[in-house]
Image 1 (cartoon, rainbow, N blue to C red):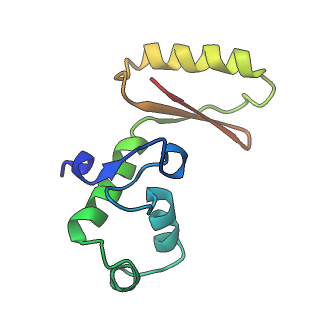
Image 2: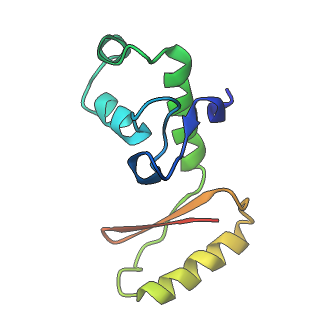
Length: 115
């Protein structure tokens, strides 16, 4: 599944949040519906522009994003600049591609950085 054919990010639409191409439906919103217990049938009934492929693209996109998620305990006492250095170190250590987003969880805060 080439999710890039269905999922786009445009700064002019929802402040750059990943959305289904040609819509204002964000990946986050759709994942939230499924987290609340919605079925594919319910989603298709309400959002008639979606199809099986676009929903599969949502899951493929989320799966790929999860490949770049790292849990780092005990970072809540670091300053933002120190956290930036830690993110840079993780990026280099794991040799992540430059078009990926690295998400580092620390305490209750999340930091994302697009490379």
